Structures are given as C-alpha cells and as structure tokens.
Image 1 (cartoon, helix red, strand yellow):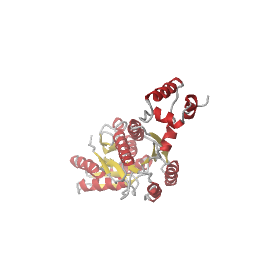
Image 2 (cartoon, helix red, strand yellow):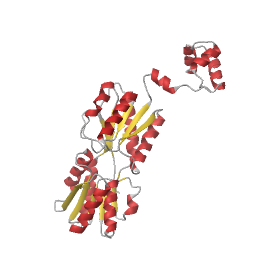
Image 3 (cartoon, helix red, strand yellow):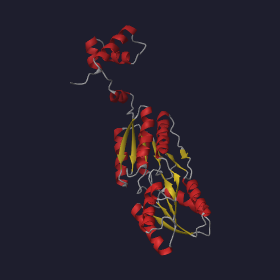
Image 4 (cartoon, one colour):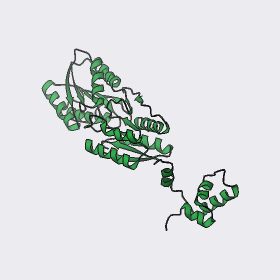
Length: 320
C-alpha cells in the first residue's frame, strides 16, 4: 500500500493539510477538538510523519556525514560508535563515506556531501591530503566541518584530537627510564600533522644520549620491514610506534626474531588487541569512542551556532 500522507488525512477529515500538520504538532491555533480528531485518526491509520519532508521545509537534512580513510581496525568502529550514539541522541542520522585513503576519493566524498546538503561533516583526513582547499565549497554554502583524529593545522576548521606532542613525550620519558642506548621510532606519513606533532613531542623529551633510527611508514608492512632491519643490523630492542597499525608491524618483527622477552615496545593503541600480542607493550590509550563522541558534540555545537567559531578540542590520555 502507498504510505499514508498528511494530504490523505486532510481528505478524510475534510480540512486543509496545514491544519492536519499543525494539529499533529499541538499548535495552539488549532482547537483542542480538531487536534484530538486528527491525532486519533492518525493513530488508527498508523500514520508516520515524513521526517525528510519536514526537514526539507526546515532547511535541514538531519544528516551528518562521517568521512573516513578506511575501516581497518578496532579504533575506527569505536569512533563510529561514539559518533552515532551522540548524534542519535540528538535526532541526527549518520552517513558513512570511505575514501580508501585516496585524496581524489576524499574530494568526491566532500562534493557528495555538499550536493546532498548534509547539516555537517566529520572528516578524518586520508594520508594523501596536503591542504584543505577542497573544503572551501563547504564554507561557501555554510556546511560546518570538524576534523578529527587525522588532521592538519587549520585556521578555519575545528578539530578534535589528543595532544599528540604531550602524549609522545610521555612515551619518550618512559623509554628514558629503561636506560636503553638505541630506539627505533616509526611514525606515519611525514606530511601528516599527527606524525609531525608526535615526532616533535617524542624528540623533545627523549634523552640526548639515546640513538634514534627513524622511519615514516604508511602501513604495517613498512613498519615490519624497518623494525626487522633494525633488529638484524643493530640488535635494537626498544621501539616506538605511532599507531596500532605501526605497532602490529613492530610486534610481528619482534616475535619473528624471537626477541619478545628482551624487547620494549611503546606507542599509541586503542588497547583492544596489541597488549595481547606483546607482554612488554606500554601504550597511550587512544580511545575511539571518546574521540567520536567529542567530534559529534563539536559538530552539533557548530550546527546550533549562528556564528561558526573554530575550536581545537584536545582529548586527555594516559600511558598504560
């Protein structure tokens, strides 16, 4: 059967569609008698208001787009859970778009969001993104954007992330206490703010006498190859990893070379898998649900504000 509409209710009751709409919303201009008649019939006929049509009239889609590079580990599903719970509690729906870590796909996703006139965009940048020029269209048509997790420095857009420099400094200070002579530090792509900030914090806190071998890895395979080479060339037993993906490569190399008991691995993790793969792993707990909830709260705030003010939200973390 064709879904019941407000116009159908109006024809049944021989009143105007606007009267039905106002009666369903308990508008004071409509008499109590008419309101009760409309609401009773709507209940009997199991009428459900068309939320899309109502939102269109209000010039709102009630839809928030979440643009992600990939869904490849537990952190991202946790982020999505944190976002969707917060948005659902505020009567917003979530649209998930994946860029496959390709800048061209990120541009396509942003354009799609603009064409759909979503109410806001939560964006975790892909590794290929060097600037934010492709977000100018969002500014032009008034769609607020919040960057989260993978971000780059911006004067225009709000962001939600942990204090990368401070957290990486905590990792370095822990390594200092272990009195190691050499450490292999593996970061993500060099152009990302997350890599730059964590590198800055790490080297600012690391003891000067410790020799550091650096790698910028785009995935766990590159992290594994570098860690494996360091073990074979220098008998390296201390490692720093920027993410769960990097830590997976490091731990794989450590286990393969049978130096698990002698090695120290420190880095950033959501704590759901990596601690079970290496007994001496110490990590900054990077909680996806907390990040997601904070990002959703920020986009809701920007949607509600007439004047869109940029904010950088730093999430507190600790070394476990």
